[in-house]
Length: 149
Figure (cartoon, rainbow, N blue to C red):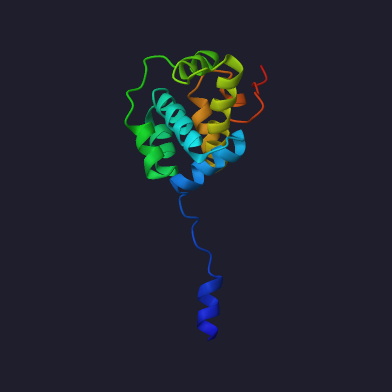
């Protein structure tokens, strides 16, 4: 019996979250009435985000998300220059019926905040390092600027 207790107490690596858990987090964060709506928005936002990331950050993000979400990131062709945060929101907005700038900002932020919570602060910092200023707010963070020496 003692050996069983020792094995049960051994720390296990945290499993990668599931698509269902990620979309449920988006649903809760955004206050959406259905998971189907949260899933639709998650697909739109992650597809758009995939066009903005390259290199190690792109790979790490795709590997840190559920396979369905990782595929949405990894299957996109990166843009030569990422859109500003406002342009990013506007581009997603065009794919959401009856969207306004405010509702699109809410939708994008709901998805990216849930993603940030899922991937943790270190990887979120890496992802934000590839994006223009203004994206931190979409990830549910304060926009910090480096002090000039």
